[in-house]
Image (spheres, rainbow, N blue to C red):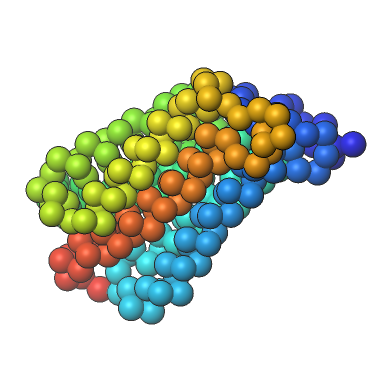
Length: 225
């Protein structure tokens, strides 16, 4: 018997069939561990070296995304789907705010306020209406993809290009999954799904976003207290 029966089921469905047990979606839950692995790797490898950069906080965002994603896919409950989506702006809001600074549309001194403003508004929208909040996250992702692919500040940055390619590839699979296209059935239904591949690709994208962002922030020449 599933301990999650007391919760309403997820609003936006995914390909993986729901199991009546402690772990509703094993493939999607297991693949979300990739966020935690990437967050740990980044913190271990760059944490001390980047102690004067704002980007040092980005692994925490990835870690929270990983935890909320695991919780959602274990439960497949509407409540935790909201929590899962609400965690994404921690990462997206950071990259959006940093992009504004990189494009010299705002001074680095207001970066923290810009980040928290974008993130807070996004989280509130997700909490008020999941569909609207999810749409806002998608718009943020599209803006990041556009500027990081076309703007001169990243055009020669290999890590930035890799981050975008991985994010776009994963987003396509995420859309396919929510559209119930290409779902894996039968014995492999709980081993792999488009959504689980999205987790792996977006986690890898987060790794390269971090590496690109730390290079860009080194140009800000402003230590963090």
